[in-house]
Image (cartoon, rainbow, N blue to C red; front, side, top):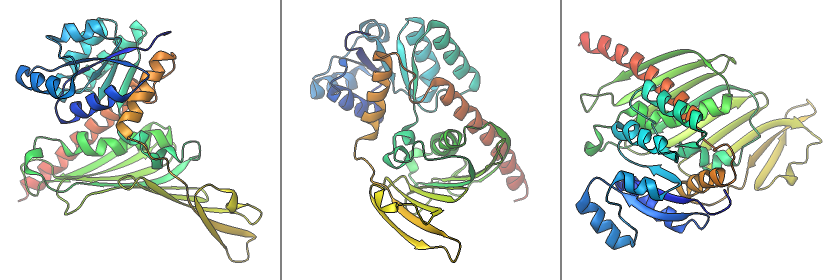
Length: 335
């Protein structure tokens, strides 16, 4: 694409408004405006932001090369079909759709039409994760905790498809392996839905991942720990930092590493353990993911998170949810 792509937005709820603000700031695209089904809200946001408010979905699609879809998940399939049928590139927030079949249809259509399909798995763009790109080899064990404080207004949000799916995607990204087995359980504590869930994923590579997601914790936590041969990584995704512990030869110059590092001898082995806190870049994660998708369209590159990757994470999340529901039924029947 020789000129800046025109980008439109569908949906200006809480997250959609953030997308609007970021798209107005990105100089590598022309933000043409937005569409939302709520006319009264659209009028107010247009007045506040100065952005064009389209009269219909067809209107904003016609004006755009790329559409960012930030509507409720139950509308993803319907909106996605209209965008792709119109021959426009699409960026869609996760989870892709309510069912795997719906997501498969969207991904297949994008492929057939040669359109770019990006997915908003925001943690891929976390500075801590980006600092370790290319430095993860073959993970053997992964442990993740994603804990949110209780919010009565969020009871319609599925703890697995909304929270755990972030760590599912990271595990698939880190291991680059198919999953051989899934075990899962969940319990109801403060609501009539799953409030906390745990999943154990066994990958064909041999790696095992233990994931916990909760919406009833007293304080928030987003941590993931990864163990591989001669290396342990601890990601604090909330604080956007990572600690690395590596077993290396004594000849290794840890002072050449960027960020903070120190080392100590590992007994009489001729090796040492290096503790390293790499310098993590500072940037807005949502703006970064949008910039990189726009760049992928403009330069005809593969999006950093593809529709197929979003589909893979969704399939795993749905299987976990199914097994967790089975576990929940057993627990409830014994009460």
